[in-house]
Image (cartoon, rainbow, N blue to C red; front, side, top):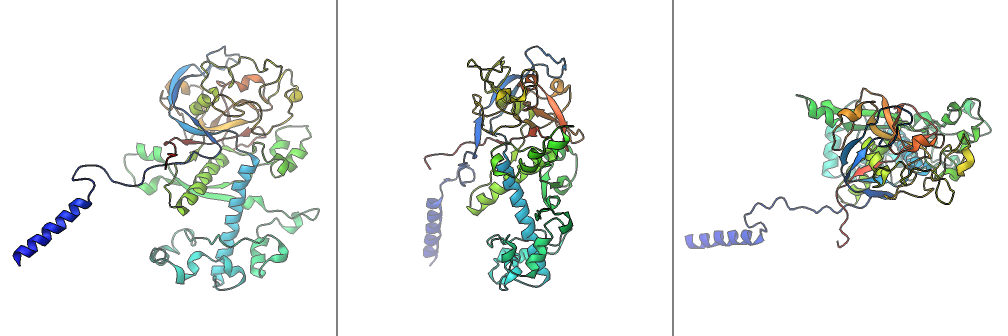
Length: 451
């Protein structure tokens, strides 16, 4: 009997040894390999070093960009400025989420669930307790109803389509919620009652990694920041930016009309651009989760150094993204959208902005890195930041400094501001008719096409 027992133990040990791939060696945790997708609409900017700053004469004598050799890591960058169409996708998502949340909360207060008709179809997913997983039921029992927001964290049912036609509202409760999203009746005119855009707020949280790294003590929760940002573009910039000028058509149509869908979004502050980056990351990772794939790293605004490196397109000492030093090609055409000559806005075939994919791209295949609209960066503006910033991935950022660097010049600027080395700034809560943005994402490797 003892011999039989020992034989059984030896057999089990043999089986476990044969099933192990490590053979007792330190081979690391075996998991999925990283096969990321190339982000849609982005170009890979390879790592490299460049001379940042003004290598040519400083015509404006601002003396805030002395030359300095810096190195940046690889990253992806949008090949165009974020367009009205792309930003409208963000606005529509926020609007739908707010409506769904209001519907779910009212259904919960009325005690209505998916088994009921009307507004019950939009109840929180956990309202149908019969189909909850063990984990979801545990979370509902232990966490729902706590915190500052009673409904925080409860999942919305996005499978049910929203109804926007007033003739098809399912019940009076649905009509009550939808009515709360529109401007008051007394504020409408010409029979048009539009969405109250002041209610389109995007709420998100982020971890202040830099503060956490420099703190000597503190718990993780001490460095979690919450932001609530009104995300609708300020369309009045077309009026306020220009005194004694008729720009009402741009105010009325530029953001929402299909004619301008492929034009760069403007009237967006630095804070709104940051909120867009957070949403774009969430939007992508929600899809990654649904397909069982690993999360992608965040989309963000480029640092000032990343922006200048990308704008140069690999051309050493170039004045403009195309090299330079001229703004007119050898065929007599302007190379960008700006204010040429002595203020002839139309000389470059454009009066205001142009479509985001206009003119020739630079050698990194990026469009309008000069002109069209200036672009927000993630860096704070300090006149002397080049003197003390790191030479590796430099970024002079401070939460106490509300001046943020903008780059590239715009449709209303003279050629000097189109130069790749010219620095300018705007306050982060300001919105302008000539400032937009594009996003970047850190490079983590490319997709393996053999898989």
